[in-house]
Amino acid sequence: MKQILDLFSHAQDNKIAIESETSKLTYKKLRKMVEEFEVPPTGTKIGLVADLNPNIVMCYFALLLKGKQVVLLNPKEPKEAQEKKLKELGIDCVYFCDKNGRLLFKKIKTEQKPYTEGIATYLFTSGSSGKEKVVALGLENHILSAKGIVDQLDLNEHSRYFITLPLSHVAGLSILYRCFMKGACVVFGNTKDLYFSISKKAITHVSLVSTQLTRLLLDWKTTVPSLKAVLLGGSSTEDVILKKAYHLKLPIYLSYGMSEMSSTITLNKVRSINQIKSSGFTLPYRKLTLTEKGEILVSGKTLFSGYLDKSTGLVAREKEPFNTKDIGSYSEDYGLTIKRRMDSMFISGGENIYPEEIEQHLNLFEGVSYAIVTSISNREYGRIAVAFIKTSNHIEKEPLKEHLRRFLPGYKIPKYFLPWPEGQKIHMKVTKRIRDKFSNLAYESLLKSAINS
Image 1 (cartoon, rainbow, N blue to C red):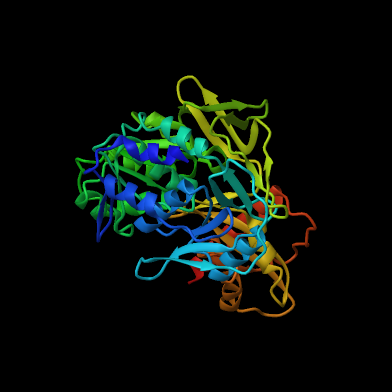
Image 2 (cartoon, helix red, strand yellow):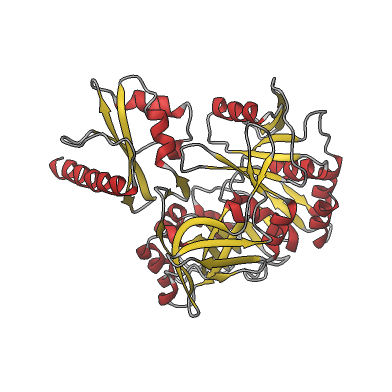
């Protein structure tokens, strides 16, 4: 994997590659650590719990250099769920950081499965059937994704990119490739007080989800001279938030992207208030078309290899173009505008949520006859999950939450659990129309509760 070392060759030895609250790593030191990292005898696929930690960055690239394929795991997920995934995929080793940030690895008793050549990274993404899919990306996918956007973001050797997004997501992982390609500095720090970190650390670039932007605006005091780009997923951010950011003169870039396309597909540098609904124009190495009904189809050199088949351990190759299930429109003046989803997925705090996955686990809880999960709008998170529960007897909310925490990360657990509406029949198949109806019922129920309280 000579390309890995080539990626680090764009900066002078003494330039800082990674900066955290406790340390600074030069490009020379990072290259040395990556080259000298020892991998224990194990299978080709290796798990990595992707905490926001410099050691995780070093480990990820070191594993790729040694010819390993890295399965990135969400650190917010229960350990029980992480280990279950690894066994399912036939992976017998996982790297992780302890509470002091030290890198450790653990062997897992499981039977290894075959692998497909040419894969660098596996990322988990929720599926509309309620079952997670595993996206397989090659090294070329990552590199061309970065190559097609770095100049658009004016990223260079003097840039300081603040990491605020999970490295288990393609949006967080792609930042590493962009920075190292241009010899920029990846900065780790306090992600809870964004304004403080951005201003104190002279940050030039940051990628945020809508929830983080909302919190940043609440803390915003005055212009940060160093800041050149705030990259957002435009379709999941409310207009009122974007308008506020625009009037505060934040350097906003709106985008549209997905794991299956190795991150960002289109980009829009907001220069006027009329542009805040646009996700922009297609970047190099990507292709985008729309069907007659407005569904977005994507292809190009950043398109993933396919989904990992958990039963065989092999990657089932994806045909081009890829159906995104997003509905949009495209104009010469503004580029892409996202209108809605074709399926039931919604975005909460920057995370893709499929109600079916949550319903699956709710229906396994003793005493639950039926569950429907839907969403309602929320100023901070964009949308939040709400569950309607039909039960044979009264069920307390906390035991339900505790049950879900065993299988799901916190952001997938509904914020509200509501009793089944009187007169509503149980439907064998929950369509988008039915979810929309329950969404309205949830809004009315919560509004009534707020008024009465």
